[in-house]
Image (cartoon, rainbow, N blue to C red; front, side, top):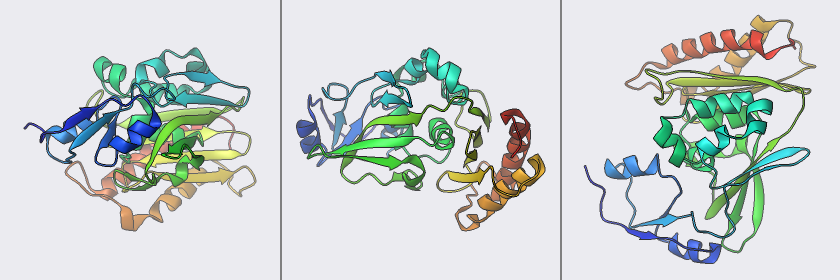
Length: 276
């Protein structure tokens, strides 16, 4: 199929961009958006490119306490960042499994998150990393959203006439994490995926593919859990609290997906180091 007719705008500043966005949709890499337009799953009279906006960049800025990733940073650029590979190997792994080379060269980290698919690789890895989403509105007012508050439904998020300008990831020496997924074939969208990160405060597990939004379970080091089996049971219990959101589709039942998550977690927990 071909998409419905649309115009294409390339604003150079935020004021222009928000005027165009009154009747349009933003596009950076477009690796999720363009297939959806071609299949007529969504429709828009106008696409608004973010690539020439002067205040947006593809910079990866490394500060003492955080790493800031610009709105236009592609997956390939993320993979080529030595600090990401060394300090956030789970994020690097998630990026490496996102599509083929052509997709990685065009897709942006921010675009992958904003598409708000509950199985999106980067969303799951960033949730476990306790990242923050930096957004800006047409008045150039900025705010920061914890990523666990960002997703509101299937391909829905909390943006309110705003654009994401960057993503901020805390730098915590000694963090240990792992990203894993189950997919039908290499570079395919995961059927379910998980990311587990263990740091000084405790363990954070992010789970995608079972519900209409990603699910996060957090266990503090002071929690009364004795071994990996108890940790696994606590995480699964948290997940089961969202049973009313469980998704059954053409790829499998909710029960099947829950069992896949259990297998992935059981494989991941011994790897993330010291038990709680």
